[in-house]
Length: 197
Image (cartoon, rainbow, N blue to C red; front, side):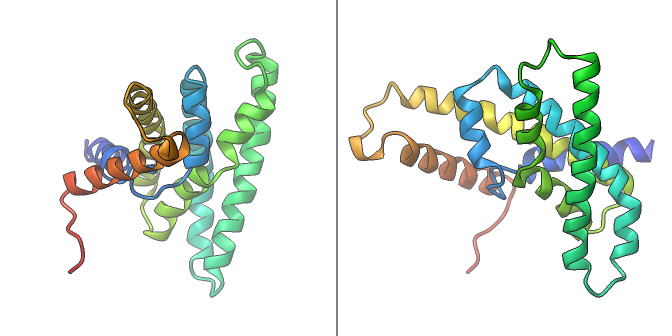
């Protein structure tokens, strides 16, 4: 029972408290792509969740071996990139073999979900704070689902901003970044952080 509680705690922490978009600004370029293609949000989130979870499980025993090495700060990211590439190939062939009709362009959809800073950040954060396996899996799932949640929230807000009279100079990406910054500050304040004095 404590494993389930630990898993859910870490997942909810990563989903809401340490949302990958709002607290770390990882993956914002793909966030803006997904907002323009809302049908892709669910596919992208599922692919990101699957790949980061599998990569985290595979990399967990290996990162323990590398943390004792003096160059672990270089070797751990390289290890996770290699593991993610191997998982990418495995998932790509599974999609091609069993689900070809679900994904129009699996190389692009899967490639964007796997090879971005959001996926690597989801793997490196638990490695840097040395979470155990259950917490690592919960953190990976929560971070990936948090990315999907952020895409939905930001997409909804930007569609609402289209009905506002935004000055011409702020239309497009500037207002999107301002909106994202305000959401980030709101999330930062809601979880009880205080600004440094």
